Each structure stands twice: as structure tokens, then as C-alpha cells.
Length: 88
Image 1 (tube, rainbow, N blue to C red):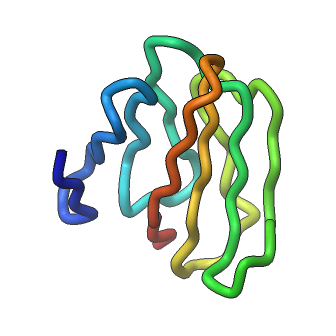
Image 2 (cartoon, rainbow, N blue to C red; image 1 turned 30 degrees about the vertical axis):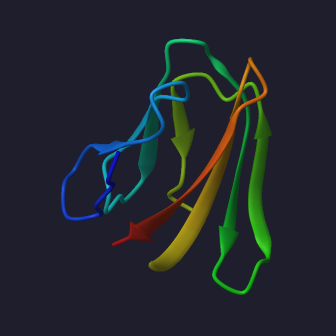
């Protein structure tokens, strides 16, 4: 399904879940039906700035500077998704 960063709720592949809001400020919310095994956030240059195992339903992002990031999520079934996020 098509994805857009113009909407606050960005749908990932149905088997992974949703990441919102986008743009974000101090917290990213994760909504999955199968749970999240790991999540990592990286800069556009590829530097990983945050890596979390079993992050639960939210990720604290207040320490990140404003800019463009990519989040990679792996669910408990081993499916992964990468999504562009904007920190305000």
C-alpha cells in the first residue's frame, strides 16, 4: 500500500504495524499486532543513533536533533520495514 509522510499515521506493511506521529517530536509510537522485536533509528548518512530490543509501544526521541531519520522495525515474525521519519 502507498505510504506518505503527509499524514500523522503512516501505515507500514500490514504484517508490521504503524509508526506515528510523523513528523514527531519527543516520542514515536509503535502499534503492531505481532509485537516489535527490535527498532533502530539512523541518520540519512547511515549512522545508527538509537537501537532498541523489544521497544514496547513507544520510543523516547527527545535527545535526537531536528532532521530526517530512518527507522527500521523488525517484528516478532522476522519481517522488517524501513520508514523515513522527520523530527521537528
